Amino acid sequence: MSIEKDYKSLKKLLKNHHQSHILAFWDQLNEGQKQNLLAQIQDLDFAKIDVWIEKFIKNYIPDVIKTDFVPASSYNSTPLGPDQQRKYAEAVKLGRELIATGKVAAFVVAGGQGTRLGFDGPKGNFPISPVKNKTLFQIFAESIAATSKKYQTDCPWYVMTSPLNHDETIEIFRSNNHYGLDKNNVFIFQQGTLPNFSPDGRILLAEKATIACSPDGHGGSIVALHQSGALDDMKRRGIEFMSYWQVDNPLINIFDPLFIGLHALDKAEMSSKALIKAGPKEKVGNFCLVDGRVTVIEYSDLPDELAEKRNPDGSLVFELGSIAIHIINRTFVEKLNADDSSLPLHRAAKKILHIDENGNTVESEGIKLESFVFDALPLASKSIILQTIRSEEFAPTKNATGIDSVETTRQMMITRAANWLESAGVTIPRKPDGSADCLLEIAPSFALEKEDIKEKLNQIPDIKPSDRIYIS
Image (cartoon, rainbow, N blue to C red; front, side, top):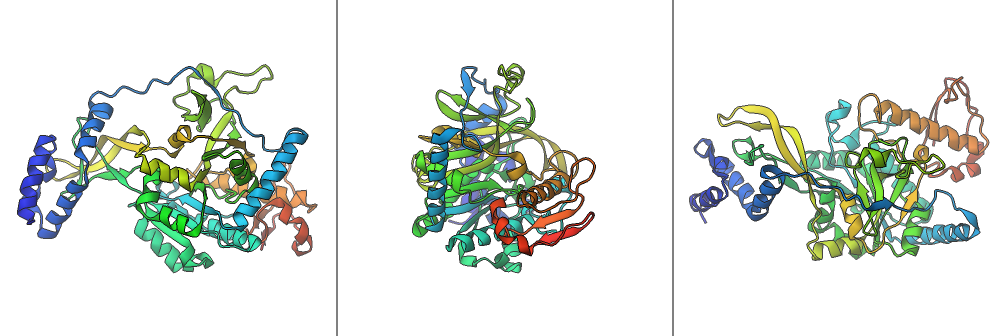
């Protein structure tokens, strides 16, 4: 079909859906731009878009949070009593077997840019380690390589990007020789996008021939795994479980035998790690049971009286915080795609760059839509939660300064290294406030967990105040 015929049919389609303005600059476009714009329009599902506009823009009513929910139960970070000790030991044994037999893959969602860190480029390429300034990607790659060596297997790595950084991420991996990993074991794929809207429901244009879109959220990973061929690749390799995390957390324990083993023993489909919240309103999701199913309720949606509610011992009733660390079964994701069980969309009112009716670039309030991966939890037939310790496994790098910043992340990396070394009997110089009086960094190739250090004490130098020590 010619461009002109496509144009006429799509012009009629747009008119029927009150989006004719998308073609407002048609006469100013060259042939390539016209083809590109028509292809974008053809990719839009207007039946769904009309529903979204009604629900999230024209007649938006915030979701009413159910009040008949209770705190979710969890496994403690360390076993309680002899029965649980036996189960944890069995889980660790099973988890190690699953890793060693190639049943577990690493899966990081890495679609974000480093804008809030004052960094131009994919967040995964941000240099974060305290001594060697390794990037997030490099730290994860070294952990995957060390796990593969430890278990004498190949641990594949799946990396989900977004249109904002896909090509640049591929080039970063290529130029770094995939950080020493076999490039055939690194599968980089892109998440989808959703159009941006004006407050009156018009689809916005980023440029005269480009529809303004945003990544569809980490929940988009469920569909992207299928559409990219990643699921087929996993099936071919015999992978049964994905270890899921977000790119901003360098403390992640990617292949945790206990977590993997408990998930498998309990025949769960999607499981989560949690931490005890630092306070009632910490900005993490809250693990709850809604209609008997594990559900994450956002911190902004949990009523104050429930957020503040305490047990007789003073602990928070809703104390389990979600930190975006999951084990997800490959077959569960396959089932969601086969059933077209798309995750619910969430509305975000944000400043959006777009062009106005005169073709000038402006920034104004608009509506973005996205989905969240934790909304898959209630769809799982079984879901477990394992508590973890914040200082061991959660140091999100979200801001340039302040809370969850570059500075706090580096300090947590130093603190964990110091604690690991001290637990093995190494003397660490301390400041009056108790923090380490030195810069420390432990390479994943040296230790994936603190137990690995005890066998290598003869390789660790004496550590003096103000030293910069890299242990590899």
